[in-house]
Image 1 (cartoon, rainbow, N blue to C red):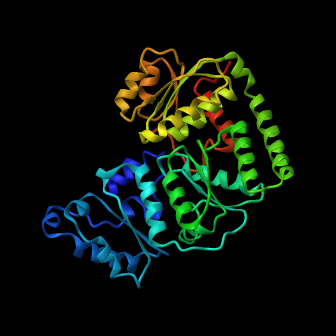
Image 2: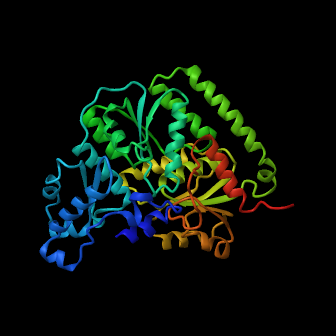
Image 3: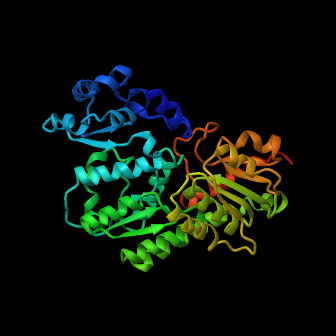
Length: 398
């Protein structure tokens, strides 16, 4: 289980290793055949006891997987034995019930049901939802950038996952004036549950904003809802747009001489695909050929994703949009197409140049060919970073 987490998720997320409390450091019952017959409750009891003794934490998250769900272990009863020793959040998440995106929703639902209590609303405080750790390979810096953007217009921001006082931030969720959901579907269940239980309204955005146009639109919408003075917002937007577009000008020669109005393809989760596609088209003048959505969103959200991918594009011919979670099929879909640039995961990269005659940039999970510590395409500066990543695939000495 630990190695599966380490290599299957953390390393596949751009070397986003889990730190001192993740990866191979994660305590686990390690259930085997005998526990399927006799149950694993006693082993769980011992594991909780030893974990509380040797690991310091404000709270513990207990994730029960496939075997406890199949054999019917009473995990909740075991947890209740330790209710006076440490807060324990139980997430019932057997792998056969869904993927990591489902796990994100299950985590928040468990937190809302098990530990949150009503709090007075705090003016100007917002929670950020919809950015799924590790599945969005730039998640840490995406959260940080969004926090700084909103703080610069006078708001207080709870990003939860990367905060040092994470458990305290979790308990502050009901105090927010608004929840901001930066996805067409991730985080929506959590936002609706928070609204129902604590009366917190939410604002949705199709993706994490990339570059000046998306970021300025995001800030204006948030500012309007939270009654931030126009003067404050517009002054900040003016400063950031002036600097960003000045730096984009430095890449003007390459934009005009090499790959001018080139076709591109995207294979990524819906959040990444929306932000990247809109930036490449509306800010750089590239042309989308095919967009493949890899995160297998529920059917009821797919039209929203299509709308987010097309309604803002300032072009005459829309790209082909395909929902395809199977990486083999998605690679086959890329064959015999006119695109010259591919923005995708490491699964598509090896075939890009050798078989598709295209240059590639890894922008989505899994990302085995890049290390991501403090990087993202979010915000004003993130657009510049995306330009750097794609231009370095062809830029060189003249």
